[in-house]
Each structure stands twice: as C-alpha cells, then as structure tokens.
Length: 174
Image 1 (cartoon, rainbow, N blue to C red):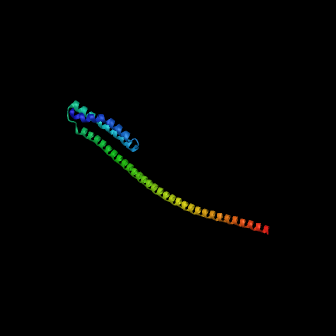
Image 2 (image 1 turned 180 degrees about the vertical axis):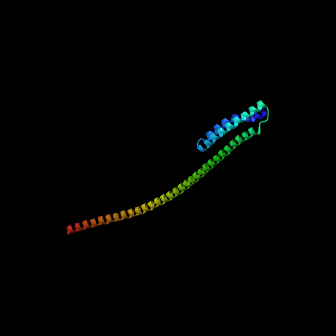
Image 3 (image 1 turned 30 degrees about the vertical axis):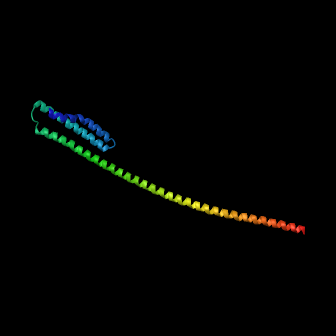
C-alpha cells in the first residue's frame, strides 16, 4: 500500500492541475481540445489503474502481460498527448514572442520617429521664429527710417510755410 501513495496523490492533484491548465489555455482553442483529449485519456488510464490495483488486492497475484501491456498503451497515449500539448504550447509561446518582438520594434520605431519628427518641428519653429525676428527688425528699421523721413518732410514743409508767410508778409508791406 505504501507504493500506491504517489499514485493516490497524483489522482488527487489531477483535477486541480487540469483546471489550472484550462484556465491558462482559455484563449487557445486547439490547446483546449488537446486538454479535453488528455482528460479523457487520463480518466481512462487512472480507471484502468484502479482496476489493476483492485485485481491485485483481490487476487494477490502478479498481473498478466496483456493487462500490463494495456496499461502501458494507455500511459503512452497520455504521454503522447502531453507531448503534443507541450509542442502546441511552445508553438503558441513562440508566436506570442514573435508578436511581442514585432510590437517592440514598432514601438521603438514610433518612439524614434516621434523624437526625430519633434526635433524637425523644433528646428523648423526655431528657423521660423528667427526669420520673423529678423523680418520684424528690418521692418522696424524701415519704419523708423520712414518716420524720420516724414518728420524731416514735415519740418521742411513747416519751414517752407514759414518762409512763404514771411515772403507774403514782406510782399504786403511793400
């Protein structure tokens, strides 16, 4: 009976392990189908094992090679399904890893492109601002020059009016 302890603890853990696997593969239909197959094969293998243990307990004799061969066939089926499930998990993991790497490349590309684009816009803004500053300085200088020219024209015009009044005044006095 002490030899059956690993078997009994394995049977106790089986349902919890299968439930955990179902939860982990909730988004993978092919893995769920493999788990369904595995569950059927495990129940069949454990059921057969229970029959073998009962036969051994009742008869006390060594089991026939046919019974042992059938047990081996069922256990091999479980192992094959587990290997297929493991291969499917590795395939899905590789697909997800590739998708993750691809998303990382796209993210890096967007980040670098955004940084470069920001730098280009900043440079363009700097040139535009400095061009406006230079343009404003030139216009300010022209405005000041034009203001000075107009003031000089006004001054000349006022002087000419003064001279004209003075000339008219002299003409009247004559």
